[in-house]
Image 1 (tube, protein in one colour):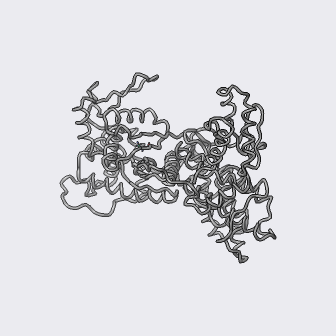
Image 2 (image 1 turned 120 degrees about the vertical axis):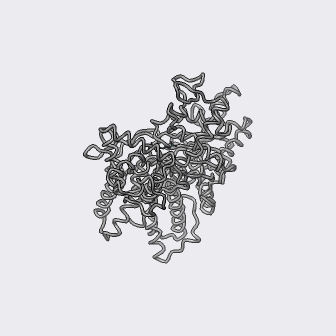
Image 3 (image 1 turned 45 degrees about the vertical axis):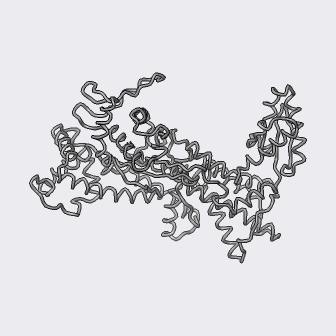
Length: 588
Ligand code: ARG
């Protein structure tokens, strides 16, 4: 379906032509004076220069034509030359009728679907998920869903941090605690046990212990570095341990992400990129991109127009070891080879921006990506506590993700049972669903690049710009529709009718914006635009609800019109929250 703004613009452009002016002046936007009109066209002001005529005269000429067109209820010329418009209720209801029966409520799939790989999540194996990883998961998931919704091929990759010193530390600590394990016997040639020699809680305890210990004990750290080296150079026992660590950790990560309604198409990690490194390095040397500087292998990435210093991208350290960069570049190699993406999007903490500038420039300069492959860094800000500092536990430690979610769910549970009598089991379930909306909406409603304050009280409130408020609105609609059905009402043949009140029309106009909002939100990679759309939509709905007798409406035709409108509002809201990565309960 065409966007409603385009439909209106077409009519206004035609009116400009009919009045003797160029059609390019007919662009219409949503009014920024909703007290005066619904849409406005500012073209007369621009046309004034060309036609050497007062803008108000031009606006008057156009308005005279618009008044003859029955899609407009009202058209006025206002000083100095605005054209203020209200559309007719029948025009809007016809538009919504078509939306109701259209796939994705009239959002047309993109003409040229692109393959877009999105790198998000980025958890580190064997280290517990912390709130820093939450934002990447939430934002990345919603961008992936939004992209799919508008019709692109989106491939999400978790890009596990599974390569580096943390593995050596775990191995070293395990050897210190249980040296008799077969994995440490260098002469062992048999098969290694299928069962991991630790559980996830042991694993999660081992890493921080080893990490803290290594900071105080250089010998221990040396040992861990040696273990990392041996692991990376093929020591069998260590590789067997690595796959145990990966299995145990990934199983736990999958459970955590499932609770967050986040799911990845690919569970690749840094380790998967390692096999591509030697060939990539050789190629960079052969083509003359990489050279030795102070013993290290580097590629220059600075550009003439730089206003600040962009250091060279280091490919290998002087001891020949690879780095975080090297892994990211080698990851680009397999992503291009296996998936030929048109774009790679990275959803990572904005503090890594300079790093990604180096990686992207290096990938482009060395032609690891095609000329037209887009590389996008979406850096997100920090999640702070109410004190404005990075979110911490009460004791000042790093807040674990599970703790944070439990806290929200507990608060949600309290609010739900306070609200109405509920079966405790059901209330717990509902609290989880609503709690997730509180967390996700609280995050996504901010522009991703900005820091934000994680405020449990505000996020879990049923009022204001919050996830629970949106869900509350959906639940309200569901419950009206259920009551209607329980009383024998049929929903199939209900048809939206022209609005009869201002609040009904405002709701309808807001619904009609849907396809335009979704398209624009993806173009700008801005899930917060979906949030602000549904917040406005929920407000318009609640306004309409408070002013309108719906189920007690005597006029059966009218009532059925309302029901059809409610069904559309529910559908649109549900699709939007699905794109944001959460869902609504039936009751709350
Ligand atoms: N594991 C990294 C971290 O915890 C994030 C990975 C981001 N993605 C990437 N391709 N480098 O900071």
